[in-house]
Length: 235
View 1: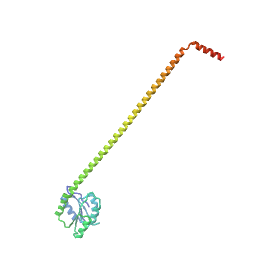
View 2: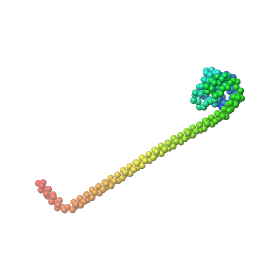
View 3: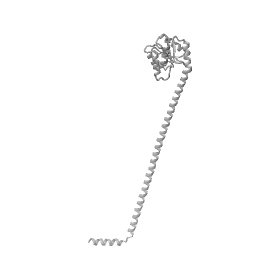
View 4: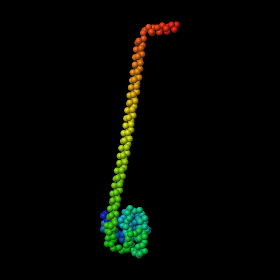
């Protein structure tokens, strides 16, 4: 089972221990030092809680139900975790071959029970000062950089949208200008046609006046003679 984390500025610690008395005692000690603590009683629960709590340190017993602590360490080291936790074996196995198995499984420290509480507290304190806090600062800087990058991408996207809108507005303005020029050209052509029509009308009127004037100058006896000739031909 997992205990809710104690609020504070300490580390995130996962205790993997199948003996309830031992895990509760160790968890109480760590909470007094203002660390956030989770407790798992077997190997599968340890893997599941690692994904949930993202621990800074895993205090790992070796003799566990399900599969042993070495297998837990091997699986944790093979996973793409967000950060690499410090794996500390806290076990009754103290032979050289046991230490060698811990090192091969990816465990960083091998402590043999019973562990002096002051030594364990000092270990976590040194880890927090030398590793965990700089890593947390780096993660904060990384998150800040990501936020700045996202803000920069939004600015780039906004600038691209503005450029697109400006380009579309320029195209609309060019289209309107082309329409205006075509309208002016049509207006000039219509004006030219009107002027040409007026010229033709004036010419026709001039021809009509000249014709009328010519007709007015013909004497009446000319028409009488023409009429007499036409009557004779008719007969």
